[in-house]
Amino acid sequence: MIVSHLRRTLIGAALALAVIPAMARAQLPAPTQPYASELSIDPFGIPFGYLDVEGNTSVGGGATIGLAFSHYSPASSDDPFTNVDFKLRYFPNELPFKGFSVGLTGGWTKQRGDEYNGNFTTSTKTSVSSPTLGVIVDYDWLLGARKRFAVGLGIGAKRLFASKVERDRIRLDAAAGIFRFQLGYAF
Image (tube, rainbow, N blue to C red; front, side, top):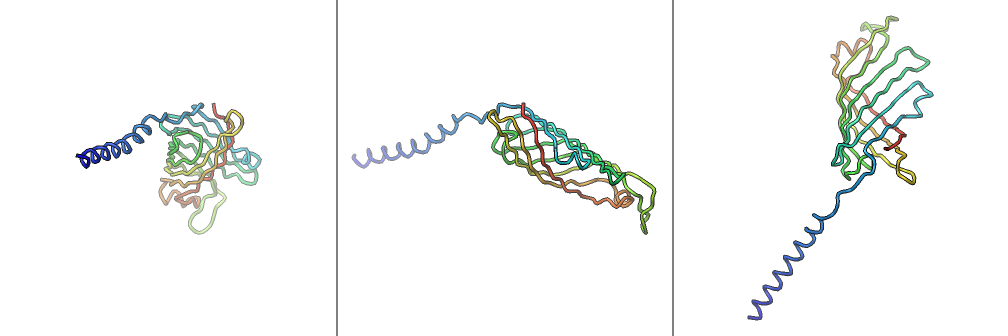
């Protein structure tokens, strides 16, 4: 009888130890983010003829969608390029614009350059336009007393879907690196 009572007590205690922590975890509130959107720019590119602007908004569950526009037109060259990308990012900590994120980009790029005829570069200008698809890894911070000042760093790569013949006209690679430095405002 004592063994039976002891067995029931131990089984009850084991169940309580297994169930109570699970119940406590289930009742934890989801992380909250006071800001739903962010607008940012790369300030260091401007003196070099590079404009990069992003807008992102939270869609819940740690996911954000955004639009990025970049245009590079250096004073020393008349070969500009323009990119427009839609972005989908996921923040595993479920707090958009804070911490580590991974994502996908999809968009359009257009680059102008000197035409290459297979043997040498000509003085004729031509351009190549192409859809793109890429992957990104970013880390973002919200700083300041009200956590509104946004800083973002990131890297990635995108694939240009222009044909090899088109890309070879201006010696354009099939893939391009993505480097991100943004300062902005969360609202």
